[in-house]
Length: 166
Image 1 (cartoon, rainbow, N blue to C red):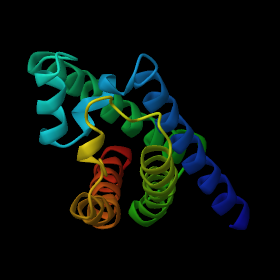
Image 2: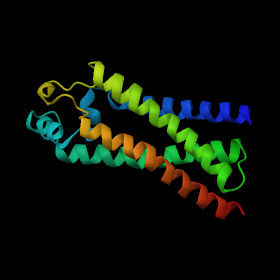
Image 3: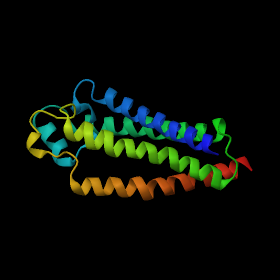
Image 4: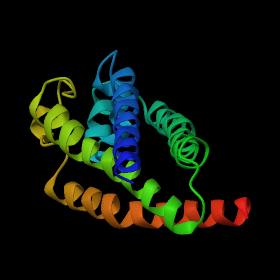
């Protein structure tokens, strides 16, 4: 059992690394590439400054969701059901929850807390007065979704897989 816990945590670290990679690719030509993750005030300022358009922001947001959400779901399902061979709701649920929770912690602490909050990598020139980009209200929403949301997502995915496997 402890081997499976270590393996599942490692898979969560892999998903977190994938998230970091997606973010790094997204900001490789400047943080404006990921402005869809910022508040509407920052987005509007970027448009006003001529750095992007609302259409480009919408398109980047759609591409991000269309690639990342199915990719992350595929990753966790492959890890839990193909690699770890989980059987039944409970076995699938806890493994999904661990993987997603590890990724969530990486997102909250390393990406939001450190990378966005304490480096210049995510700074968009002309929007510095709108910092912090991730407000206290945003952090609360992210923590709430990251805890309750991951439980719900894990339960739904495990329920679906339990139906399909049996």
